[in-house]
Length: 226
Image 1 (cartoon, rainbow, N blue to C red):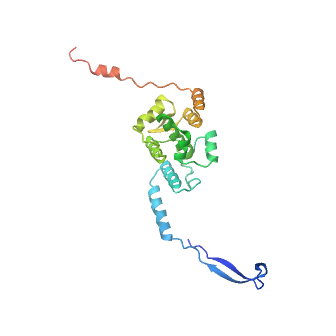
Image 2 (cartoon, one colour):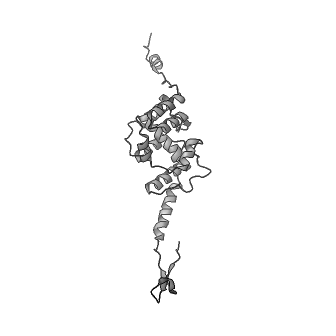
């Protein structure tokens, strides 16, 4: 990576008027010499680590790094055929056309009022701003830390409540979860509480009851010899 030398034209004016002067010489201006060794080391180290990750993991790592370094735009090479595209819909189109907010700014804007709302907001950000529609609870925890939000006491329980009790998430198989249309509508409505209420009414959800294991416990605790 050798940068060609630039030149500047030095103009002489016999009568003091720059417009009447003639070009007498070209003075080379030495460019700033890049540190090729350091640049190659950064490339090699980054590739060595990122190449070991799966497509979604690599996408998250590169996007986080770009955000941390203040680099705007999409992460190069992340929209490949092997990566999961963001879901179609108005939210995806809107997210694609606007500047990506930081996780911290997004959460500050939405102002979730409960743990399950915060889970849904984090899921929304992963889906539409990080190109990660399928995620694990650990991904939510990492993004929560990046957003400088309070730590979860039990993130797995909160994610399960967002799923079973509120219908904001749903299983995507293999230990992964994804955002539901109900969760998407709720996050879009935030922080307007009246809009949230209307969105939840429009996307109704019947809470799934927890499995009743009391009968099994009673059956297993019978007295021998009865």
